[in-house]
Image (cartoon, rainbow, N blue to C red; front, top):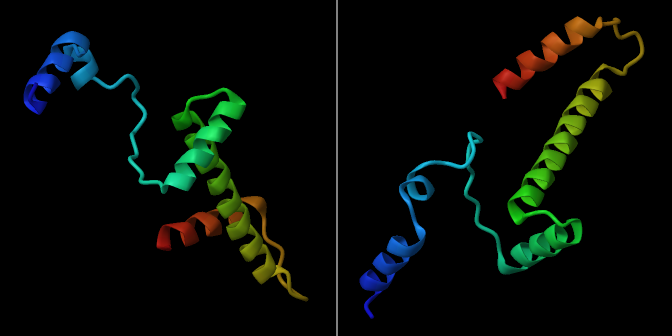
Length: 104
């Protein structure tokens, strides 16, 4: 059986218009490449937590983003933590933080 015939057979048997052309979710998709070791590690974490690999990958990305946010906020705090530094309101701090993030 040729590759094309095999592919067509699979499509005829298992694929419908919905599975081929409609997303199961409205969430944006991100395609990433992992090394074999990274994929195996992700698979073992997903198996341990009894979740799909994509769910585990999304959880890990969220954790990494929180760590990056903490690092950025710590950096801002260290710059401001000097003797005689003026006090800043909560609103002014976040306004400055967002302004800095837009420039980056």
